[in-house]
Amino acid sequence: MLARTTIAAGLATGALALGTGLVPAVASPPARTAPQAVRAAVADPPVLTATLARSYDTFDANQAVAVDKRYFYVVDNRSITKHDRATGRPLLQFVSPDDGPIIHMDSAAVVDGKLYTAHSNYDDSPMESSIEVYDTKTMRHIRTYGFGIYRGSLTWIDRHDGAWWAGFANYDVVPDGQTQPYGQTYNTQIVKMDDDFQVVGSWTIPKKILDRFKPMSNSGGSWGPDGRLWLTGHDLGEAYVMNVPAAGPDLEWAATVTLPNVEGQGIAWDRSGDRPTLWAIKRSTKQALSFDVPYRSIEDPAKPDWQVLGPGHFQQ
Image (cartoon, rainbow, N blue to C red; front, top):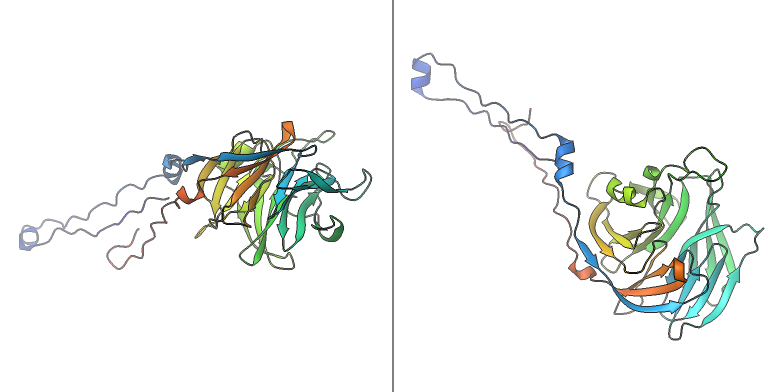
């Protein structure tokens, strides 16, 4: 937050000053603090820790997990496996052949009985993305929405407050056989879309978070019961709790939540019951994990100290 200075036109007044011929003194404006220095002085948001509620052994928890009231859905590049939440038992699996059009599903969200997955051609160039939709009862593929060559590589999608939200990732990593970074991590974008998946707003992620993602990018995103957007990277066991900003292009960083045993990748909030839980995966052991999260303890950052100044107080 930038420091604000109020400049007063402080004149030395009175008959003594005028009568002696002294020149009225004008107060010099205080030196402005460099914006970069102010930003550097701002502390990182608080760090909280989630508690593991339950773990499930699976055979294909490589990319993400989605969840509804009775089932969870483990996402791999070309497959999705539906599991019973009570027992963990796998029930149905969608599989796409290696030479099929589905290449890299990155995460998923259950909305109104349908499973919406974020899909891309990672790490081929140019970047291409689509949303692939499945019936959660039958696990059959039922629809696709194509973005073609767009803002980056689609890594997550979710529904919140009457709109679709998604992450388009870009990467500093240089894929095999290429000479340039795969889009550059700083170009990663979070978008808000209407019911036809047309973008109506777009934001960037604070660079301090993107630096933690490097050389990869934003892998997961899910709206929490607190009305905040929770984001994850590709590798670290951390969720970054974000607000849509009051102004400016960067999302507002409210907190970081440590997720024990998680190794990045896609996440999903279970918003179906009275006790919301956050779901993630541990890629190295192929486990799906659910967490109790102290989201009620998170406070929003201080609001911008905006001012409206009147005559005699204008900054110059």
